[in-house]
Length: 416
Length: 221
Image 1 (cartoon, rainbow over the protein chains, first blue to last red):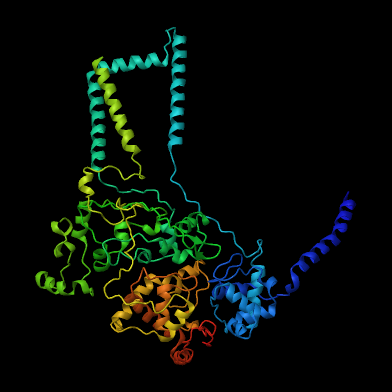
Image 2: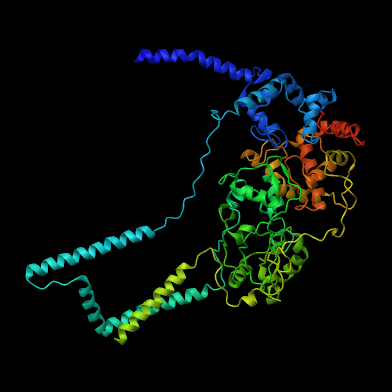
């Protein structure tokens, strides 16, 4: 048995070699030796090339995973170090590439040595392999859902029901032993309820108990009318503030650039998304699924990295979360720029929210409380320099100036 | 019998109310007392607008609208030639502040709009680079840049960087540009900055074939 296997194996070896030779020769004349340091190549690639090139897809420039098969090493070295010189020297291939990419200019890299270039090219070969040892598998953190305890309660109910049935059985067995007539569960329940309802004390207690619960629930329900705290609507795109504002620490004002200047903290247009997502085409949590919704909205052709001409853009219908009544005036710039209040003061830990919810109640009591307690940032704040002088005279030099003292409780400030 | 019915009715009401209250989910905004008072007929930003067929509330300005004090930037197109022209010829127009306050404001704006990619120091090592979201962001020290070219890139974008014209006004762009030049000077150091400036003036391409004679990054830095 062993010997036959061995025979088979040895018989296959020449086939293997033949296949390898065939595959290698099919690469054409550019199958050259690259023996650079792939690790160094990777870091050089990431810092110099990756803004325009990827290994397996076309971006600003062509995909480079198989570039060593397409071009000769000598040509590549020349092109990478100074492609403009190469084009000026009249190289036909170089000119053709320049035309193919609509004259977008690749910078020269005089800082790279020939060894560096070889390292990079080695990386383009090694890095493209799917089972590359360095390619770490990204483990996606599974969001721990809040444990749903419905199942637990059902199980508990079943156990209790079982217990009742068992006790009824036990009782009946005891009764049989004693010689008394047995009764079913329903009959027992009926007797107990009737006896209890005939007792005025029990009825009164029961009525009070039910009434208290009733009015408590009624009170809570009525108090919640018009308050949308914790409102967390489903958005058309599963945008995660946790990834953007938390993990990647992008400033809130980058997307909500209107908050510094205007009444509204604007909902960013899809164009702002595209500032980064022209490049970042795969999301941390959802891969391409959610990001492709932005592309569908603006008409971005991801294969050719350009906007589709004449595309009918489809605005993204974000659902507004904070619905302050029209009867109250609120201005973001007043709080963000003049007041220097952090976004999180009202919006809560946005940088930890996978899905945003309304953190604050947005009730008048909540506004007023904050205006009573919050000190105005008067120091080195141009908005209050003049007012600060007057307030110092009025309240003394070291007085703590709260929003209330500068008129933050006047009705007309918010209602007019 | 009457008592029994009362008891049953009360239980039903309490139970029903409990169900109603507990079914109020966070996916719905809930009810309001007087919606006509809360939501006036005046149209607010970001609400659907029935005047338009697409009901889009956030509309584009009418074509040809310009803000007060607008300076046309049409002379510099969103092309390689436009970039080279801006780099060589454009300086900050009069009227834009260039004092220390402007520089401080520029630093603040840079932190908001640029730092996450280009890094606080301008070395291309922002947090998105560290998290390997964006790769290959150049250090300002390795690029030949001028106030004009920075303004051009912020306005139109370049490579995989998108246009930031909607986010920062021209005045803010000039402030950012001043801060970027300061960062570059800090990265490069005083001496080579002068040499770079000389190189740049000799490289000013004015002809329309600028793209092919583009000396973008030929200078050794």
